[in-house]
Structures are given as C-alpha cells and as structure tokens.
Image (cartoon, rainbow, N blue to C red; front, side, top):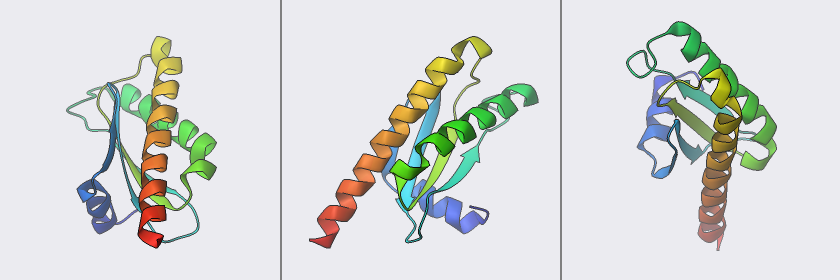
Length: 114
C-alpha cells in the first residue's frame, strides 16, 4: 500500500488485533493477494536501528503468513521496539495477530456472501 487513503481506510476498519508489541488492522481489498503497510513511529521507537529491526521482523512474518491472509490490506503498528533477545516472541505474537485478523475477516466475508 502506498497511498494515504488506502492506509486511512484500513486504519478506520474495525478488524483489529492487539498485542503488547504490535497492533494489526486489516480490511478486505478485493484484489488477489494480501498487501502490507507498516507504521513505526519515532515517538514509540526513538532509535532508527530499532525501527528498522521492527520493520524487518514484520516483513519476514508477513511473507511467511501471506497465503493465509488471502486478499487483505494489513497495516501493522509497531508499539515498542523488539530487542534481539525478544525476536522469537515478537515473531510468535505477530503470527498470532495475523491469524486472528485473517480468521475474523474470513468469517465476515463468508457471512456477507450468504
């Protein structure tokens, strides 16, 4: 996702999953594949090194779970830095949040098709 309106549409949606390190919001995009947007604010994560590490972690987990997300626009908000020692826990939390949002959007779209 590259346009501001696309980000705002996803952020306005009510499909949200929250963890202690990340907040994941999603919205169906009507396309063929999932798309990722990230917000790593300087206020939440002051050091650029930590923001970049957080974004790399999000991309890595997104690529692994992308087939499960079908056609969703997903925005991940990084709440706090993920230290090197916490990366395994961060991966697990993100995978769970992606699964939660994917399941919720899948159930909503199945119910709307009926």
